[in-house]
Length: 637
Image 1 (cartoon, helix red, strand yellow):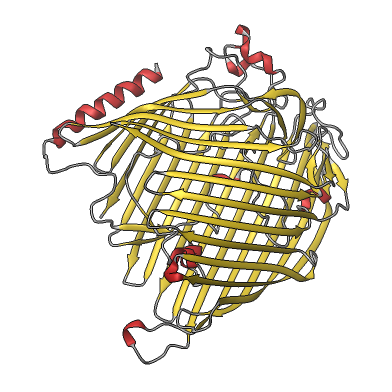
Image 2 (cartoon, helix red, strand yellow):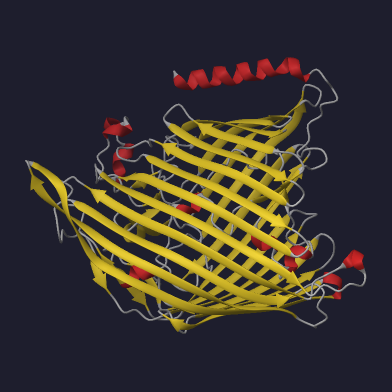
């Protein structure tokens, strides 16, 4: 019944919009005429970013296109929007220098310092983006940005994911608030952001038996038995960051093209993180490996981080052959680890005591340097950087990155990059103390080297990536969800291609990824991951309405993948069931009227046609076929 109401509402919205479309001059474009609003990340405007200065990384124009409009979040999850991502695609990216607790698979839903968006807009800009379905499922994003005077740009953002899920104890409630600002004058440039994140999600430990979803007795998914009935995780993150650049050494001559000889930069960040896993059901004792302190679990870890960085670098007016930048960063971490003990008070189990197992301060002094240059009027780019911890808890850790780019012509470029790191393993693999798990290890540092070749042709909308990664002393979680280290050196090979095909008004956008790692290595990857979108697009009502109708397709080859441990929020090896070899088909229709957009999408339409093996992680099925409805509206005032 609810699905019918959504369809009726959509039809009424279309009919109601028609009288406003009589003006033939209101033609629809993929972008607002004479772009008004741009957004960018801080790194794109850093003085040493020659890639942006030479047009390889331009500011993004805020538009109202339908490109991937119906894809509002990652497809690879534990079966509900807001639950942790599943590592289906290999990521060789370098981990942060210094203290690094471990991968947070939930924070990928939201902005981080490196991805937070700063705006430059000629008029106040507001965007609403909302997705829902007949069940309790909500995805909401709000952004407002405006300039104050000529030099100050501010924006406020709010993002929310709220979904009950299909199975018991699977609901999510994730929220992020961001406030950011940028200010620039001839001598001064500053970026500032404030972020506040609250992630609350239930942890059902997966269903008891994967075959249950194919049984007619469990057509009501709320009756499917799950492993954990009352477990949940709460994560809180707060941060304040300030990045400043002072430009000095201007020459008085040639006033129209004044450029500084050098700059001094300073950044400051203070951040707090807390993670609590709780399960107050004493009957869940068959799921956990042990109970060390209490029949009820309450594990809590907290750490506070303060970073200060002072750097100096050459400016655009410098006559030196190579541009350069060098500095030092001080990192201070205060880490605490608690385990709650429960006792019987007046006939009920209550949290009576908190054991503090770890109360430690970590400190690092990190030196970093960079050299770069643009040759042949920007056709050839060279960029090399490195970091080294010369004192502190992670002393002697190091990273290095080198990039060479060749701009073949106005539409094609080729880029070769290499990276090397020698670092401590993430903290969670070395030490964990909780009610259900505890370990203390002394693993060796991990060495990672990667080489990547990237080619992009803008005219043909073609991208090719070839990558080889060598790893040594890799850490992982074994089939018992306990940390281990694989000491031999091994290789991971990846190749990817993206291409947009067009024949008349028919389009096919494809992304193909090939991955290879030896079977003997405890790293699990499907050999093929493919994502495709096939659609027809055209105009209606004298070019007043632009629409697309098509389907998105997802597929990966079968492989022994990962299981998920709710206590630690980490993935571990499983050898019991091959995951994958299932084609997800999501038919959709979307349209745009000026700056208003809407879509209807029927996710997992192949459910019931193919075997019930739609899993990305062991015991965590993806949702059955579901109708989703989304709208977005952009305003310039």
